[in-house]
Structure formats: C-alpha cells, structure tokens
Length: 145
Picture 1: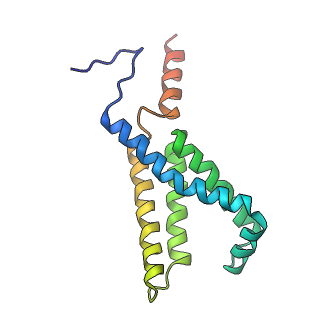
Picture 2: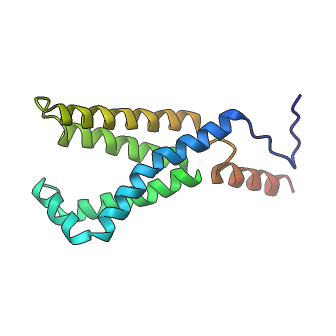
Picture 3: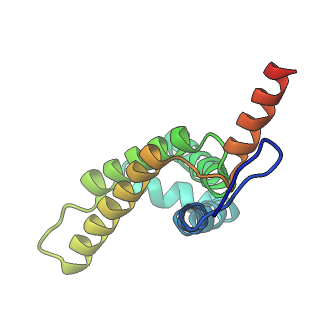
C-alpha cells in the first residue's frame, strides 16, 4: 500500500509515462529547433521560399526551442503544449495539404497526431516528475509556513 506525506512524493507508473511521453514529444521540437538555429541563414531562406517572413521564422525557431525545453522539464507544461499543439495544427493545414502526395499525407497525419499528444498533455499536465509539481509544492509550503 502506498502512503503520501508532505515530505515524500510517490511516483507511479502514470508519472513515469508522462515524463517519458514529454521527453519523446519534446525531442522532435528540440532537434528541429537546434538544426534550424545552427543553420539560421539557410533556414530563413528555406522558410522564405514557403512564404514565411523572417520574424515569423525566427519566432518559430525560438518557440520550438523554448516550448520543447519547457515540455521536457515539465515547466509551464500546459502553456507550452498549447503553443506546440497549435503550431502543429497550423503546420499541417498550411504546409502539408497536397494530398496527392503520400509523403505529404503522412506529414499531415503526423502533425495532427503530435497536436493530439500535446492536447492530451494539456489535460493530463506534466505529472509529479516535473518542475511544475516542484514549484507547486514549494508554493504550498511557503503559504503554509
């Protein structure tokens, strides 16, 4: 039987699954953000060919990195998941609608699936293995003291 006291945090399988899921979801955005940032000029050029202005392209790279880190760490998880979920929906509907191409259909469906994972994360939260939980516990401790 498991008991929880104020000084202990019980971690269960669901919390471990949330951590693992957060890490897997964030990996895509972190890898892509690092790749785009490390080849910034060519990334801006490629995005310009798709009709994406430089300020939006730059904001996209920053968002991928910042929200990717936030989700991995479980910090402001719901907000980061909302941003990336919306980003995936926009990416799917703006850039992957050539349904005559099987590859584009797969990209469209993958973007929708990732958005779905992000929306599930909004509802589930980050779990106990997160900065969100650590911060919440610290605030509760300060309010009680």
